[in-house]
Length: 76
Image (tube, rainbow, N blue to C red; front, side, top):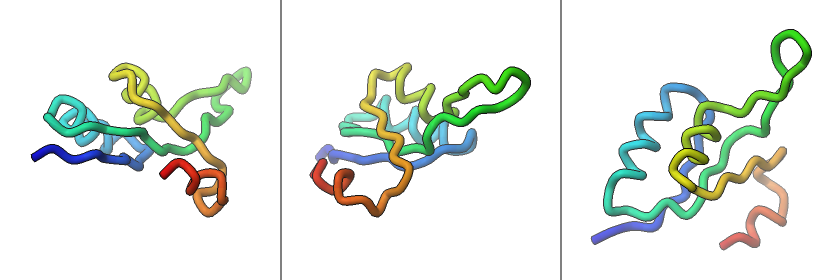
């Protein structure tokens, strides 16, 4: 039996879980993570580790500012 999964996470420690799920028989529908933020010198916009990993595995990434908005619930 395979499941359809929506993954939510941002930090480095969530990357191994996302990798394991993406290599399994389960389907990851999309990934929710925090929006890219300006960091370091020059205020370059940096994506979260989960965002980069999801792009590597060609998984749809959503970066809402708030999860409680109606637009995000219309996805289902």
